[in-house]
Image (cartoon, rainbow, N blue to C red; front, side, top):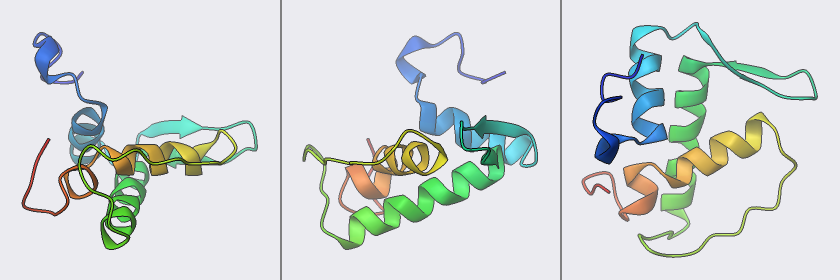
Length: 96
């Protein structure tokens, strides 16, 4: 269980995923209707890659980003990537 479950101000899906990926990287995390699945470790890695992609393309905190994708693992990791500090704060040193 997420260590910050009793602190609603700390309910961040990206933080919960990072914690789960650290504790149980091979645990199932998401599967989609196309038969694709990701472990918590894979989902965390993919979302960090997405965060780097958005950062390299100039996405800064407070900007709106449209993502047109089918629901599935790729969409979820792109969406999570936007919630990573690198994508939301304009650089890896920033934070939400």
